Length: 155
Image 1: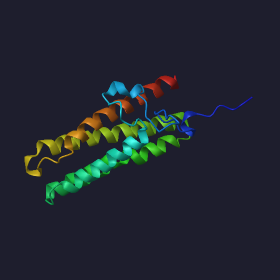
Image 2: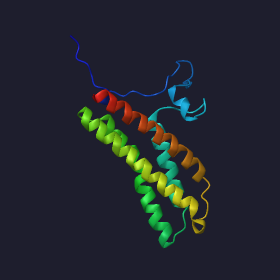
Image 3: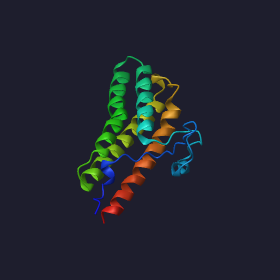
């Protein structure tokens, strides 16, 4: 009898590739408002989001407040990428769920810092702030759904 491999030990990308030209097809994540041309590999989305956060923090002014907010935003905005790697390498279902919740927590913290940046007129309005806020909303929905599903499967 073949031993069943837990999901945490095998990569499950959310995209379907065609052999003709690496065309991305629409998947279940389209309910989050993503366009048809968007990639749905969560690791790639987290990587792109981390890059966007780094660029946004670099555009903040070199003031005491700007540096403080940039540091906080840089830490919480880039951590979901590395924590997602930990999710994929979880040793048990309980560990998997715990690490998913950490990713969700960091994403929610990032949203709060981004909203603060949007409210502070002295920091200016970074060009990619709106895109960051849109993407963070989608990522939070994705991770919240993953946590709910993992909790349901634990019962």
